Image (cartoon, rainbow over all chains, first blue to last red; front, top):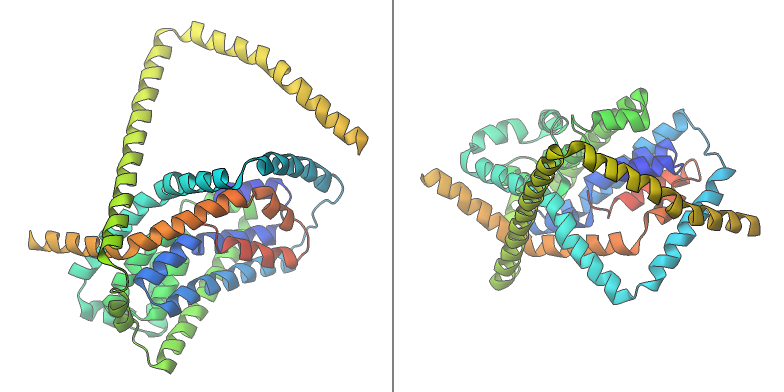
Length: 324
Length: 65
């Protein structure tokens, strides 16, 4: 998410749009929406992306209202069209099924690899909470009201947990009697803010921009928490009863099969990582034995290859511009 | 010992409930990644003081991570 935002910045996206994107992307995604439907209830499934959307817009609008720097119009679109057109024409040649299969592979390999470890940590924490957290304690602190919302805000702000992985934890909190609003605050703030991304945020948005970004997230999340508690009270629904009900929807073989698939994919990912690390170690040893020779060969090859590779590319670009 | 197995059981139960939906989410997310290219999004984030913000937030909702 952060690298994507950084590349958008390079391509001339304004700060408000970036802030908006940086809020709504981590706070919601198709994967987290699906798992919210599985583990929480339909109201939560709608509330989460809706709150993410509104929080994103608020952060972005505030940013662009306070300091607006228009994107330079002259050189930007031309260079963008060149790269965009090139990529499009390459991608259009690939047939639909091949692209679909590529998407499947990307999903199962890359996306699941990104989420999996966090998700299992989330599962573990959820297990710990359901077994060890006394219901009286969670009801006292997280049961409702502004105190519960603020407690969740304080807990969620510094930690990083991705939207998918935070969902089982949220379910465990709900089962222990936390108010839905407090849980929503955790679900929003947990993924959107954390200690490690602060430096990247400051680089993309600036110092004051980051302060505004964090305060907007805090305020809007609290407001949505209050609102959600209001909705549950108004319709007199108990989130925790709904969750227990939701659990008996799909056939067992489907659940078991998917769980096994996910675990096997994760094991394969770990194995790949391990092999990669071992290979790197071997390479390092080899280079350490012949440091001069190896690096010299590499740099010579690099020098030779660069002009051969770049020149035709440049020429073709120049021709395009002349034609245009 | 019993507490540990209890935690394990609870983890397994949640994993079973969420797995089919995670797979669904992963498949859709993978397709989004393949069928929508970054330049398309980036073009929409350039123009408009307020329009770009709303578009950015909309794009961000389905995108994973």
